[in-house]
Length: 470
Image 1 (cartoon, rainbow, N blue to C red):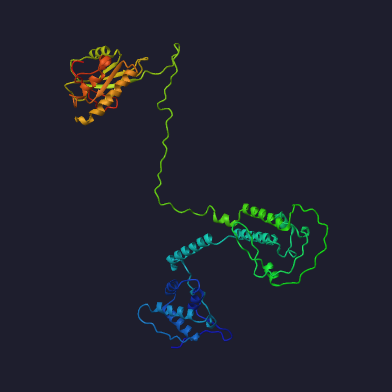
Image 2: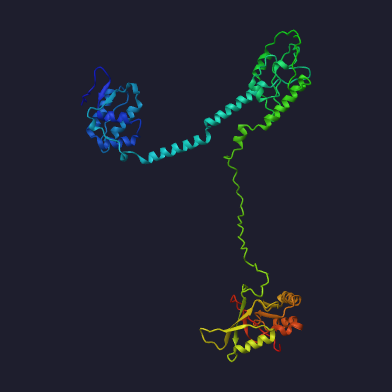
């Protein structure tokens, strides 16, 4: 069945809404999105007619396939897109639409969001690569100025001399800019005219004796060297004005100037060095473990105690600090006065005693004794001794510990000693050893409570046992 073609006779314009839409969107949309829009906007007959019209309008060797079964509309659209892409654009007629309301709008539902996201990610990676690898206009201008400065320095530098041979300097041009940049360069007018004989300077280069020992060939010297010319007659001598820099000889002046020029170039920081040692260069990552240690904030007020004497008429004074000592396993018939009399007879220290109220009834009583921390220049000693095992292996260390305590008592004139320890665990060896060491002149001041357990204010259970007879 032939398809009626609406075509202008004078121009290559064909009216078809399906082909007009596809030709317009084929360069800006992917094939999947075009297929989705055309299937939903155009009917099966319109797509079939557009395919037949395209094959009639374009001269192609590709055979037109007749699609059947389900999905033939989608495959017809694929055939249209493939033919449009494979054909030369100059051979494709201009497809236009007469009924503009038939052209479907491109909505967000018709666009493949995943593809757009992939394109955005690819574009972002390309932009990041350009930003990291490409040079900016400022960097390029700085490099250009650096190269221009290097060229001007090379052009302004006179040739090196070897023995009595001097390079050709008669055509060298010195500008005011070069003079300002290198004050050690001697102008041509101030150089003593010397007879320059014809020399063969082929295959020679100007050696720039700088730190990097780079060799930059001079195109001018090479050109002059390869084209020999006849020797010039000696020039008449003219009065030479005094130069700003004293010149001993031509070679010596050139050497001094080149040395000073090399020093000035060494002090000048180039853009390449700045770019090579820039802060944006990331150091190599250290894979070793790094120990992180934070210093603790020291409390300046801990352990600080005033030493000023209190005036007799001043009410401002420090509070009397008392050290609590807990005792238990005391007999029921013992009163507070009995304990006070016992401590006063042993230590001559006035203490305050408070009876503890137990939650569960026991066959013994417990008391809390407050020992004053300041005894008005009277020295006391409260220490705890703990022997964790009954083995004699630790007996040497235990004896050494008690000897040190005894030395402290003797050197500080200690009047009273409160000895706390887990002596109930091993009542045979340890209390006897303690009594032997702490006996003598301090024996009457050492408190040994018979069968009474004692522990310090931090509630660690410290037992105490006394040898009988003390």
